[in-house]
Image (cartoon, rainbow, N blue to C red; front, top):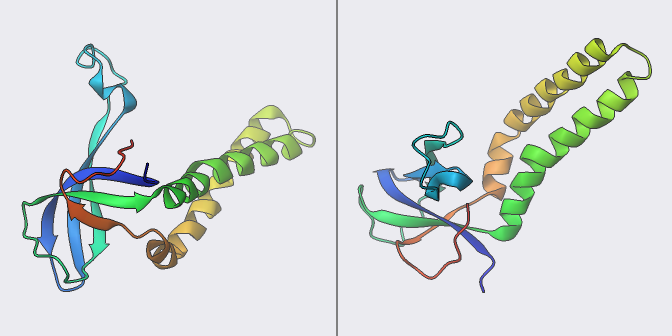
Length: 145
């Protein structure tokens, strides 16, 4: 079994440096029969930019698979979800010893603002770390998400 994560998408635009691919991100309950009645059902369109390596003959409208290694996916989860949770929790525990619950809670949530600002400042560096590969649709890659 390969250790890759794959998302189906279609090519929106191709330039000399980038290929823009549109993927549809669905919640885990998207396959449920009652999804039309449930407010938890979520589906959103996202545009992912992939470096154009000029090795493949692609055109707008082609269906492709965006592939990234599972280790990059794990790193994204750590940066996007786990570390912010730890920062909020640690800040809440420390501040609750000195402040009332309201202020401790508000200030612990405010820790997220500089964290995500710092992440956005390193966006270019992170985009080099999280590189997707484009493969023809239907290739043999274990899907996720």
